[in-house]
Amino acid sequence: MKHPSLRALLLAALCLPGLPFGSAAFAGDLGAAFHALPVDTRVAVQAELAEVDLYLADPDGDWSAATERAVLRSVEAIALNSGARVRPQLTSTPAMQSYLEALAEGSYSAYLRRGDFSGGGALWRRIQLGG
Picture 1 (tube, rainbow, N blue to C red):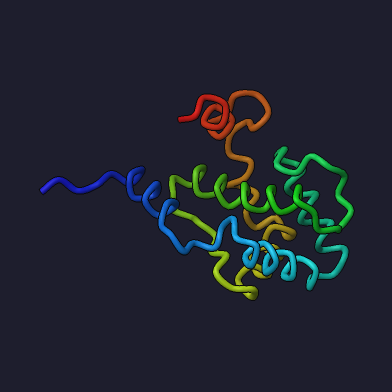
Picture 2 (tube, rainbow, N blue to C red):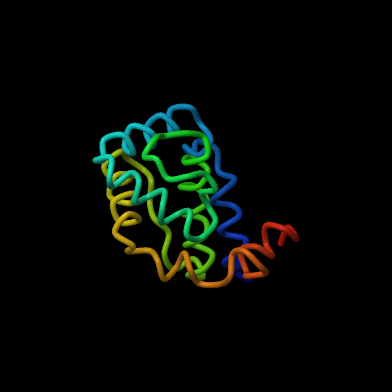
């Protein structure tokens, strides 16, 4: 029996119904987790994401659609750059806060900076070329 590829498994996981990504409740939980952090930590999260061109606004510590997109894209970038070995879990408000704090501390820097996001790295090619 042939086993499914890792890529097929990841795609299936993203398509499962009931995942919180994209739901209003999930966005609210992520926003609440972000707002529960001190302002300097929130700014540090945005600054870390701006360093790798995932957050394109000025870091100000305010929650916005741009912040939400950047945080969610960072999870995908980390999974992609780690070969799916590392995938931060955003399954609860405490888990979301832990992830955001780790971002602010630079704990995921090696995975976020692996490749050149601005000029042809793996993530950029996948986004631009759809594969």
